[in-house]
Length: 393
Image (cartoon, helix red, strand yellow):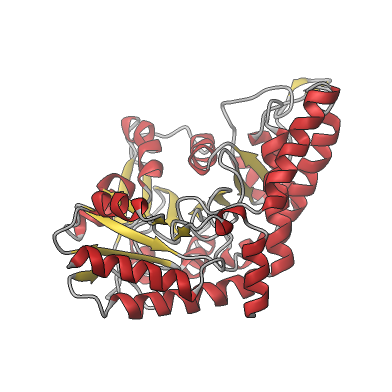
């Protein structure tokens, strides 16, 4: 991306005009003014014309967002559903895969998102077992080890592609090849991937993939994407149903034959209008350009951090995302985040609950996290590293 393109992105983003240095894009990124305008416009329509009456226009915007989501993921629009959060989307799909019974096995990576593990509790209570796929020498999930674990009792393979507590990029496509070869359902948590790295659900060979709208997509909070492979829909029976997800037919209420069987008739058209604009923006920008810029910025930050005494990086894998996990000697991660925030520099901080299996395996109580975006500049990096050096003195 050229300096001019980055300057234009920043100029179109209110948060970049306020003196804020934002390195918490993995938590929630900064929306553009156009995304905010899309939200406000739909709200104004509802106030002016009546909320239900403005719904017709809102429904058009939602379908536009659905097509944009499909374009980004190389998926049919009909395979895309919207939800209020990534955790909600994943949990709905997981529960729809049941019922679970004694002897069922669920295979997960060591880096599994804590929210997904929490959703598995009901399956465990029913007698299912959650088992960890071994890592390779780099700390990534090992496809060869996965294949050696498989038997007729494996009901699900689930992968957190880009874990929340570091820069690891798990081999999602290789895991997908194993899952498809053995005809085992394969879910991907792509909460940190969509909007940061290229995502092609056909190449990944996944049955379900979810992501939040508020992270690298730069959409509003309260929005998320759920992809369901069309041929896999028949295996998913959501418990939550209404007249949209299970419309009336001559035979009674019946589930839709598209991903909207995971939606309900009551949604925020305003938020989805904002998400739709954010999706269109990233499609116009090009996800390959985004990923190239993120990789370059991450490399510069990592190099700068290595020059600061007392900093320990917690990288895993060989190819890294735009998330950098670290600790600064003598500092609690959450207090470090707070102190930087007082300087108008935003970073993230995660405790054990976010990725409990991996954090415990590595003996980490918490980590500070820098996550980058094409919005970040060399000036941002200089201000961040200067602040870290001052706090380290």
